[in-house]
Image (cartoon, rainbow, N blue to C red; front, side):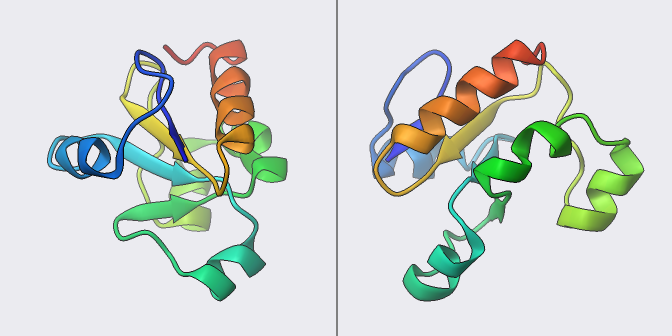
Length: 100
């Protein structure tokens, strides 16, 4: 399931269309889930338990850790997980840190 600020849920096709823009896709599943079920192309994996810390990292440290430019607070970000619960939590965390 996918979660985005303006649209609480996205279809897979909507996500594919969004990925043609400069949206950052963060998969908040655990690493073992990625290993078992596969990585979503062009997404970065930040397990939910690491997300708050990751979104407050120094941008250089973020790039080093996740091999991706750290999103600014106004950059478009989409969160995904397996069933939608964790992506909604991730969205709440991000918004509480000032992400729009």
